Amino acid sequence: MLQAMRNKMHGWPSIIVLGIAVLAMSLFGMQSYFSSRSDTYVAKVGKHEISQHDYSDRMNQLRQQASAQQGEHFDPSVFEKPETKQRVLDGMISQELLLQANDDWGMRVADQAVRDYIAAIPEFQLNGQFDPGTYRAWLEGQRKTPAMFESEIRLSLATQMLPDAINDSSIVSDSQIDQFLSLLMQRRDLRYFLVPTPTPVDDKISDAQFEAFYKAHLADYMNPEQVSLKYIEVNGADLKPDVAPSEDDLRKRYADEKHRFVQPEQRLVSHILINVPANATPDQQKAALAKAEKIAAEATSADFAKLAKKDSQDLGSRRQGGDLGWLEKGVTNPAFDSAMFALKKGEISKPVLSPDGYHIIWLRDVRSGDSKPFEEVRDQLAKEASAAARDRKYNDLAGKLSDQTYQNPSSLEPAAAALGLPIKSTALFPRKGGEGLAANPKVIAAAFGDDVLVQGNNSSLIDLGNSHSVVVRIDKHVAATARPLAEVRADVQKRIIDERTSALERKQADEALARLNKGEALPVVAQSLAAAVKDVKEAVRTGQTAAPAPLLERAFTMPHPVAGKPQFAVVDMKDGTFAVLAVDKVQPGDLAKVTPEERASLRQQMGQAYNSETVRELIEMLRANAKIKINKNLM
Image 1 (cartoon, rainbow, N blue to C red):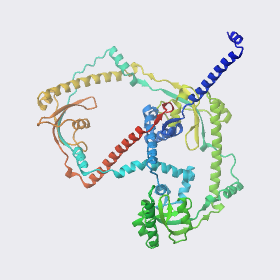
Image 2: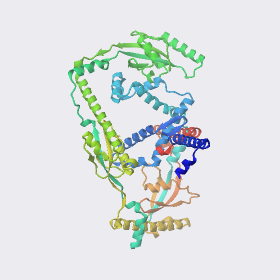
Image 3: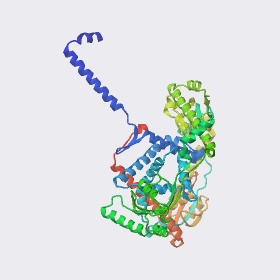
Image 4: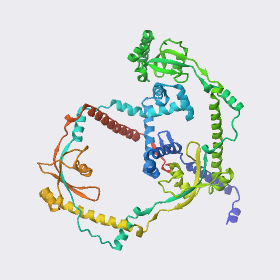
């Protein structure tokens, strides 16, 4: 056939036909290439993409938080459920919607707000004041620059701008509080009796009934799916530097990094801030400048703090008389920085314009920088050099482990041989996790993931934190299996009898309720069942009430008695038994017993509840008006 086609494909008409076919196939291939390029984002909100990397980071963060909080009760399978994944993604979408709303409505986080927030973090304070040295040391430990950390804080504050604005504008009226308290403290007079366990109960169970119940409840009698793992780990804590740093190495490190051991010049500063709105008119700008110039002209060292408390619009420092503590270069914005370092001790500046408004700056004191000698920091340098060498060794080894196990996805043996690392193993464990390495949420997620469990590949390098990582693969896989009926027969028997007993009790309770609704008295009906009536006066929803919780919950959902006639109901006591309940009387709460402190606390709680609902409605509105695309394949 191919030879026949070849024989016929001669001449320019055939060449044209062939060219068209090739062009069509090429275009089809190109279109297929472009269309097959899958989106790399999990969701797209307007023009902003939520990447798979960001989404995975958020999932891992929440998984680790839950593991730390719940300890041995942590169930990592919760984070594999579609509803959990969707809830996390919805939270990220809501955050982005709020950020975009800030941009649309001209709302931004002021530089001063970021500085005030950082300065108020207890970890950065020394003797109750922000300490730049402590702040720098913390940043170095986290491997972050000031700009990186400030960006994180700015993002966090930005997502709260609209919710905070809603919170500041909400009002809970006294009538709303009274209405809520009246319901909360409502009092109800109750009577009830517990339906006695009927006897005798049919305890004869045929083999067919055993089999039918067992099959209907098979999910309750399953041995869980389990896996055991083989793994190779690289733990920085176990690594030792190949060579200890020499004296020359340490002195060179000191010379190269001498700036770290110099305490930079610091200035003790107070300020008065006059705000200028973000979209200020020329008249507003002139008014703010005039006010700032008047304050600057009047300010002296003796009364600066008093003026700051009176006129400053920086709420963070106003209460402290404008005190900003010891500052160094780079902590404030450039305009403030330049003016602060141009002053002499004791001087007060003219108004300085920054993105936040006009500042009047008082330089109270100056502290010059000092340099620590090599001998004083030698031990610190030695520890850092050893740690750096250990980190390099860890990074090199972890990188090679990742490469080796990726190039040989079906075995750990080549990597173990090439790197001289042992292959370790775990015991069998279920999706809830096990002990040791098998308790780590990241390891559990990888072990039961498609790539490792179904495809049979090595996992990617799993970062466990603190220079510790592993690559895992399945050693054994035990599928979920049903426990044989003979093994669980006693439990099946008990449950069948319990169900029969509960059904008889329910039948007796329903019959008693029918008699009450026809007009028989509660004591008469109870006596016929050999049950005792219990009386509860002025029961309330919360607090100490002599009635079981299921009864109270049902009692406060029942209608009010009409014309003195009680309301009746059957109550499931959640333990296989039933009660018959009567609500005889309903009275509003006694508001005179509520203290001012309790009212204030309730006002705050109601305000928070209203605010949460308002924010939820705002996000729903923003979501309805936004173009959102979700790629569930990457969740």
